[in-house]
Each structure stands twice: as structure tokens, then as C-alpha cells.
Length: 253
Image 1 (cartoon, rainbow, N blue to C red):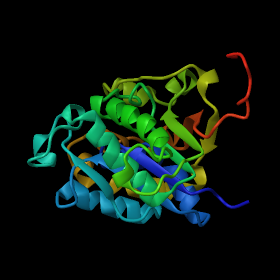
Image 2 (cartoon, rainbow, N blue to C red):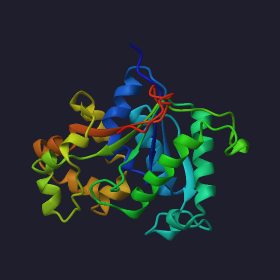
Image 3 (spheres, one colour):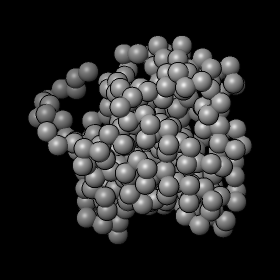
Image 4 (cartoon, one colour):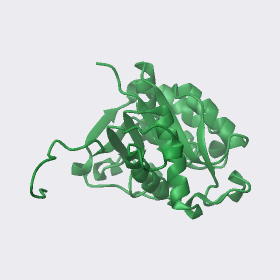
């Protein structure tokens, strides 16, 4: 069975590798169309160039960037508003255009908590993506953004409570630990066969390695610890396509 086309939507360069690098590499290796939209930074910055290298390693094509500024780094997109301060309708429209252009079956993004760290850009990217995947299929919304296209499912990259043991080194390093109940997780993916490629994509974000952000912290861990943190990816599925329950006369839980 062919792997479905897959589009990741993430807040910053490096989020794609850290959150979903294994699944992106897996789909690309199986011949699926695979791409990534990044909400902040611009192609002409150092981090934009690093993103291009990471996506090349993962097989996810060229960068697709919405061009907003990182909430904490104004120079990431000179002259553009911060992602969280941009007009909501405008930002959703930009993302709808990317979805309609790529036409993915599956979209993946941050969970509602904004992942482990809860960065405000992660949380807002989750909101934008949740709105955009539904709007993309409605012809009367954003008609200037291209021919309507409805993805089948949205998957939220997350971490279950049971993963806290593997994440203990990150916790000791002061990283936030936003996790969800285990029974919320609908897909647990062993990405160890693609871990070498995922790790190479993380290291491509040299700026973040050098400044000691998450890629830098991981680089300082023993290999076994790093594999424990990165070797599994967890997702929460949200169905987007019309439900087979249509036609019922009552609301059901």
C-alpha cells in the first residue's frame, strides 16, 4: 500500500526534524510526496538556509515559509509581524494556499499544548493549522488561494505521560515537559530505522546546536539517551473528512 502524501506545518526551523523527522523521512523513503511549511523566519536568513539543508536530508523538498517573525526573535523576518500578532485571517489564508498547492492527504503539526516546551509560536501554529485544514476544502473560503483541497486527516505531534522517563534528561536541562494522557495517542511510530537521517536533519540546524537550544542539548547527551528521546514519535489523529455518521438525526458522543 502506497504511503499517503504528507505535509508538515511547524513554527520554526528545526521543529520539523525534532517533532516529526522520522515520519517525514519514512514517507519520503517510501516514495510519498512529502513537504514542510514553516511559519516563521525567511529563506534569506541563516536559519532559512539551515532549514533547506534539513529538508534535503529528510527528502521533504524545498522550504515553504509563511514569512512571519519568531515571537522571540524580531530579526527573523524584518518588516513582518510576529506570528502571534499577525491578523488571523491573513495567516490562515497563507497556509490554506500552501495546503491547496501541495494537496496532501495528511497534515501534521504541533499539538494544542505547543509540544514539550509550549512555545507560543507552537501553540499558535497549531491553531492556524487546525483552521486551515478545514478551510482548505471549502470553495467559498479564500477563493484567491487556489482550487479547494480537503486533507483526510490532521495528526498532532505530541508526547504521552509514559514518555517522561525517556525525557528525563531534557527535564533536568530545564526544558518544559508538556505531555498528554497516554490514551489520547492514536499513533505511536518507531522511527529508529530512520533515526540516522532524523539526527542529521537536527544537526543541520547548526545555529540552534551552537546556542545550546534543543538540538545543542541533544548533541551533548550520550547516544543511548538521544535515541530514547528521538526514536519514537507520537501523534493524535483528528479526522477532517466528512464523517460516515452523516444523516443521523441526533448528536452522538
